[in-house]
Picture 1 (cartoon, rainbow, N blue to C red):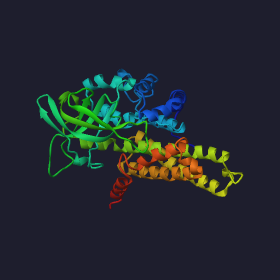
Picture 2 (spheres, rainbow, N blue to C red):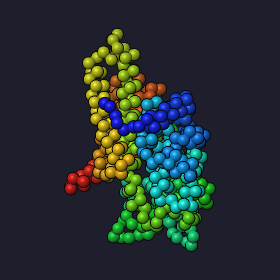
Picture 3 (cartoon, one colour):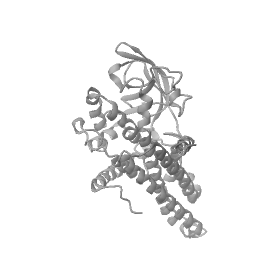
Picture 4 (spheres, rainbow, N blue to C red):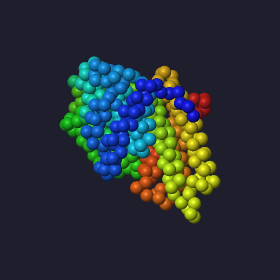
Length: 382
C-alpha cells in the first residue's frame, strides 16, 4: 500500500543509508557476528556521514532536526539488507533522548559532539538481576557524599555495555515506602571510573552483533555534575521515552518481517520439491499472501503511530498496542517463512535462520507482550 510517511529529505537519507549498508556492513557482517560486536570504527563512519546526529543540535555537530522518521529509515534499510546495526538503534532511539531532554548546557558540551560523531558510545543500565520489567524494584544505590554520589549495585542485559564510554545508570537515591517509584535518579558513569567493571558478555540466542553484558559498580564515585535531571525523578524520565522505545521495537519487527517474506519469495522460486518449484504449490502462495496482508496491516498501524510520535501525540496505550501487534506479527511471519525453507531454514548459513532467532526477543525487551496487554487493559478501564 502507498505510504505517506516520508518526504524527499527522508528518501535522500534513505539512499545514503542504503549505500553505506551495502558497501560497509553487508560484506563484513558475518565476521561481526562471530566477534559479537560491531567495530567502533563503524560508528565513527556512520557519524561522519551524518547518520547518527540528525536530532542533535547543530552547535554540537548534529543536524538539529528532531524527526524520528530518520531513525525509522535507518532501521528499515538495515532490515532490507537483512542485517542490523548492532547498538545503533539503542543509542539513537533509547539513550540519546535522555541526553537531549535532561542534560544541562555543560553536559551537552561534554557529551553531544562525541555522540553525533560516533566516537562516543553509550548504554543505559536499567535492568537488574531479579527485577526485569519492574523498574520500581531497582536496588542499585547512590548515596550523596559532597559533590559525588557513591554508586553500588549490579546490572544485567545491558545492550552496548561492552564498548560504552558513557553509561546512564538508574540508581536509587531515596526510599519512600508508600511510593516505590520515587527516589530513582539517572547518573552517567564514564569509562575508567574506579569501581566500574564490565562482567560477562552474555551469549544470546540472537542479535549476535549487539553486545550484551553484565555491569557492576563498587563504590563508584560519580560526580553530581554527571546527574541527568533532578534527583529522584528518574521514573518519570524513563516513562516519558517508553512510547518511542516501544515504537522502535515495532519498526524493527515490521521491517524484518518484510525482509523475511522477500527472502522467502526468492527462495521458493528457486527451490524445487518433487520436480516442481515450491512457489507453485497452493500452500506456498496462500501462506505468503496471508503474511503479506498481515504485515501490510501492521505497517499501516505503525506508520500512523510514527506520525503521532512526531506530532507529540502518541499515547502510552497506543504505543503498547503497536508494539504488541507488530512484534507478535513478526513472530508468526518469520516462523512461517522458516517453514517454507524446510530443513535449509534451520541452517544458519541462510538469513532466515538469523531473522528467526533475532525476532524472538522483540516480544520481551522494552516491555513483554504481557506487560503491553496490562497497559492496554488499563486504558480500557480494566
